[in-house]
Length: 451
Image (tube, rainbow, N blue to C red; front, top):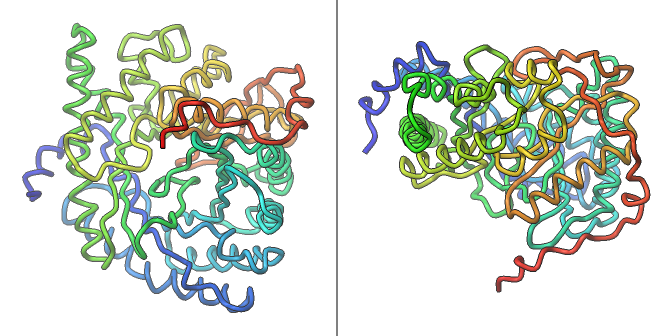
């Protein structure tokens, strides 16, 4: 039974250690919105989202005041739009703009779900949908897009991977006046999950209920403070402290999630207990790793520290709630983490080390800025590497990469707010074009055959 006492013990965390509810995300099914024409469907999509989520900003504000816990973002995720506009894929942009208009009307931060699931194949209508992404992301403010190109069960769709390299380049070009900002709203997945509340990868899975509330809790500063309190502890005691801290954070998240679902007339979905950093000092996953004993994140030992942190967070969260889901672990977005930014600027943290870290963290190469002249094939190869890690290890991996137009190594991009700033990181100059252009499907690993 959850009550105010479950929150009182977190007051110190809120006041001094940056504990917050990072997002309350309402998932909405758009399947009932499909009509005979794109125009009719777009109107129904707009009306449905505005009606279902009309009180999300009001309710989250009330909950924040009542329980004294900051709720940073109010978001909506919807059924992958490629499914909704399959009969009229050449007019997908109409649906995207209707969703962005709804997000603006509601006053929410982001709306996710301009998405496609292509892990095994790509139909003609899905290819048309993908080609709409650059223009749609350039002409909307709050709409986010994601594409799933692989899974442990199906393998990796390399035709989709190759196309996404070009789509990312086109998106950067379409938003060149904002340092390629459109790419910050576009993520490419392997093993995408249906209940992820975090952007840019959130979408409402077809296996979900009609309307669902998923909550993302974040507390890097809380975990760092807990580690600081036991400077001489061995690693076993350190892991135990992280578990206990994650337990407390997750209890606060579950309380908010259940109350939000009740007041918004939606089903309570999951609590995602991911440690999602911000550019604020003291709210950094990288600084947690450095508190564990690293001089600078990215040095030797970083992957081991991150693996231990990720595992302890998951164990603590599972003890606190039977509804742990989403991604749940530690995020390592470079532009959104002050410690990652500084390590990249020093040259200690590089793409190769980040790739190794993604084998043991929550997601993958996140908010990475690379030179604007990076080729589409190189971007596709980076996506393929991440997808391979996810496929073989049966975990979610993703790439959110920004080939910043006109920028070179030594420059930086600055998106402001939670998206932060990112130094331009070098990529390898040797080509993988022949590999990418082979196309086809990388077969699923042998351990996928479990039936």
